Each structure stands twice: as C-alpha cells, then as structure tokens.
Length: 198
Picture 1 (cartoon, one colour):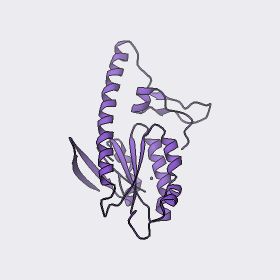
Picture 2 (cartoon, helix red, strand yellow; picture 1 turned 90 degrees about the vertical axis):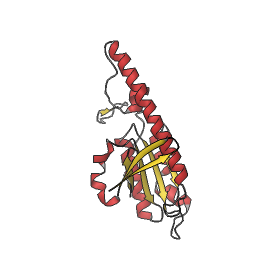
Picture 3 (tube, one colour; picture 1 turned 30 degrees about the horizontal axis):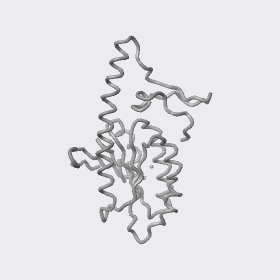
Picture 4 (cartoon, helix red, strand yellow; picture 1 turned 135 degrees about the horizontal axis):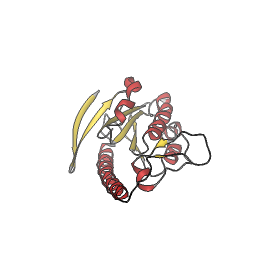
C-alpha cells in the first residue's frame, strides 16, 4: 500500500495505491475514497477480462463515485489490440451500466506516462464535482430538514424485482433514485481522496 500526495492545477489530492494482491481488503478503503482509479493490465487476456467484473462491482458498491479504468501497458509488445481489450473489459457494457458518465476509460502506460495528463485532468474534475455535489446535497438536506422531513436515505430498486434496498449515493440523493434498469459487473484500483490500484 502506497500513499502519495499529487498536485494538479489548483488541487492537491492524496492517492492511495492498493495492489491487486490486497484485493480482499479493497472495500475497506472505499468509504475514504472520493474517486476510484482502477488499473487493468491490457497485455493479459485474463487480467483484462477479470477487470470488467471488478469494475462493475466497484460501480455497484459505489453509486456516488466516479471511476476511471486505466487500460495499462498499451505500449507493451504483448498488448492486445484495442478492439480486443474493449471487448474483454466489456467497456461498452460498463459504460452502459455506469450510465451518468460515472466511468472514464483511458488507454495508457505507467511506464511511458502516456495517458497521465488525461487521468490528472479527470481526477481534478471529479474531485471538484464531488465537492460541489456534497455542498448541494448539504444545502438540499438542510432545506428539507427545515421543512420537516427530507428525502429518504434508502431507495428500493424498481421493477418489482427482489433486489435489496440500497443506500442512495450522492447522485441519487441529489437527483432521485438511481435507475433500476442497470444490470450488475475491476484488476487493481487506486484510492484515497482519489482512489485502490494494481
């Protein structure tokens, strides 16, 4: 586990990297993470395919967080073709599941730094957006509380399914219940006040 401070433009933020070997404890760090950056090895068929399952689970568990999927090692000689990586990672399905632009997919290389600027821009924007959302929600809940009763903290999925009731995230509390037509599906992730990583 590594923790480092980064600065991009006017924002300083902490990044906690939690390697793939620590997958069993990733969820312990989610509550402290404002965003999640998941790093998938795009030169491995198995790693790319398992990333889809893990990222879908992160999106399911954290309905109020932005998630970035970094398709790493695009410079490696063994890197799979972009179309194959997209299919193995289920990028189209993940984007459809995430819906409201919660998922950002970046191709790059940790070795060469390719994609780093795009990720830093995403972190900057996601952290500012989250701070704005939290301020809006606090104002909305204060107003609702003053009016005698706020929005419920939990919302059941619609459609008559037997899906469990789940706590609303920031987006749900601000914009209403999360869409019920989204079906459920990580590698490594990065957290902190940004995101765990492999």
